[in-house]
Length: 115
Image (cartoon, rainbow, N blue to C red; front, side):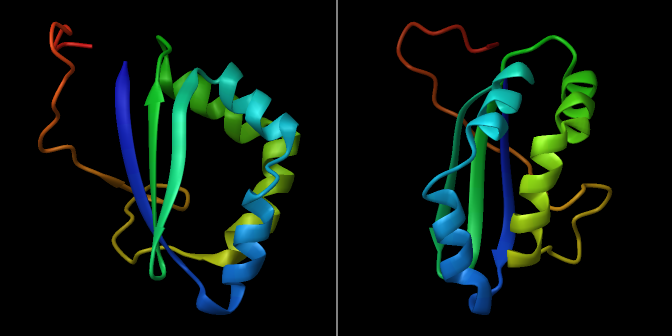
């Protein structure tokens, strides 16, 4: 399992629109994320900063992300959500969100630290 944390800014003038979109995420988008082996996904908000956390449970991350990016319903969803977001200037090669480096993690007691 791979843990991924990402961040992006929320455009203040699009805040309400973004929150409304996420109050009813399209079932097809959620299904595409499940097909891409994404689990335990959440988006958090602090001021105008969005923070996302997800766990990837597949065997080929690049292939699963390519399939997700090629999904027509996900592409339509991003046409709605992307204008609400303002990427950080240092996002590198990422499509929209900046991936964060994990510096520490506490596993549950008895858990295998390699998963």
